[in-house]
Length: 480
Ligand code: TXE
Image 1 (tube, protein in one colour):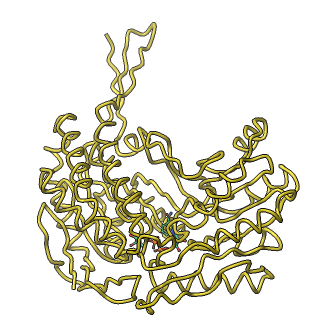
Image 2 (cartoon, protein in one colour):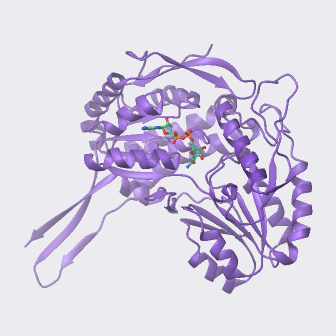
Image 3 (cartoon, protein in one colour):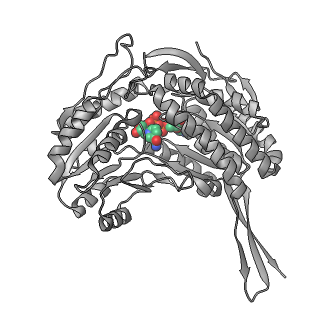
């Protein structure tokens, strides 16, 4: 059994109470470890450690903070294989993906914010004619909370922690209880990199116990959260009367809009990826595919052919395209949506069934599924499925597809395939989304603002936006 502990004040500690939670391996359905279900008391210990470390860390020079964060990044890179294997086992994602994307990106997060903090600056405003100058300080908040989900475990965990630490805060962080392992290993790396004790504290446990204790804590003054929309709404309700700063990155139901004038092969290959990467469990996946009616039948045939060729298999096999879904309950949720789609007269063009992988019969495998929907109002087209399931339907005009694209409660990202400049400008202006990709998908520059509108969240992560979130602006006005 691979049991893990909390990382508090630089030490690995057993939970004070509340007991343990099973950790499952999605590839075979077996329990392979236990994780603490940390209580309020554990969160309080983490908070005290963070609070104690804050005066020194917040006054540590930017060069020194930067040096330590970049050291963490280097150690993650040096331990790529170990981290990738752990992530793949804990989450069910293909090891190839963990190696190429998840762990390198976690390392980039530390490197990026280690560098960014040395360039972060504030404004000054001269009050002309009044003999006064204003300057704005950007001061660290104090102790902040970071709560992350299971789909990109270390990638999203570090996307929050790195800017929080770079800005001079101390952190109480909780990874998803479904995928805690790489966050646990990160503690060792932080010690090795010389991160001072208490600057980062990692507590494990359920959202409803450990997570709830973090968001309710009166002195944890900011919460950065990525996860489901319902949880985000709950966190907002708890945090608002406590006047916490909030960054919420929530669900998505992103349109992938394909015009006949696009570069077809590039679009087709990228659309397979934007539909099914990470078993479709990425908030940015283009799960609603709208295709120009003039190429609809051709696209349908070519796309289904490519999707059928994807290999569902054990995450550790090099040629696996689709690994296991993250949990039994999530598999059931995704399967339910396939049934709902059938009830709503959707046509399953391919997939739709569980897959039995030899030797791993109890793993959570599902065929990549393409559903042709009769209209855009059906539930499978409106609600976040968050699995290897996409819908397709044709459209006849720019205005029609724009209306359908915007007619969901979410607004995270949108993808547009066209070579027409006017159309690109019109649609990218009018799509209700925080991120629009044109002729690409999930191409990331860490300096850019990242986040959504409507039910996809509040606030932006990335670049200086993240450093602004993790600092308080204080204006100083000097009359001379
Ligand atoms: O997420 P939760 P779940 C979507 C996706 C998925 C659905 C639910 O549609 O099917 O959300 O997933 C912690 N106080 N996304 O239930 O519960 C929890 O422990 C404080 C989209 O797994 O939102 C975990 O660490 N924390 C998404 C984190 O919140 C609480 C990624 C996310 O879990 C809490 C994942 C509470 N009361 C799911 N309750 C994306 N945007 O990428 C839970 N948590």
